[in-house]
Image 1 (cartoon, rainbow, N blue to C red):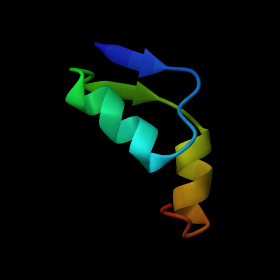
Image 2: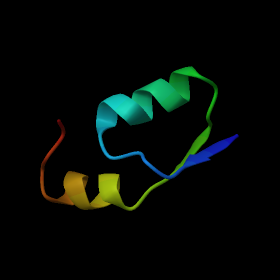
Image 3: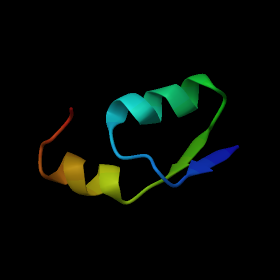
Length: 39
């Protein structure tokens, strides 16, 4: 299952994974991680 769209923070990503997603389609988290923003 791939979750995509509206994933703007790590809490949301964790929720999608907890709900069964095995892949996340997001560019926002990549940009934030590269900037060191893990909130």
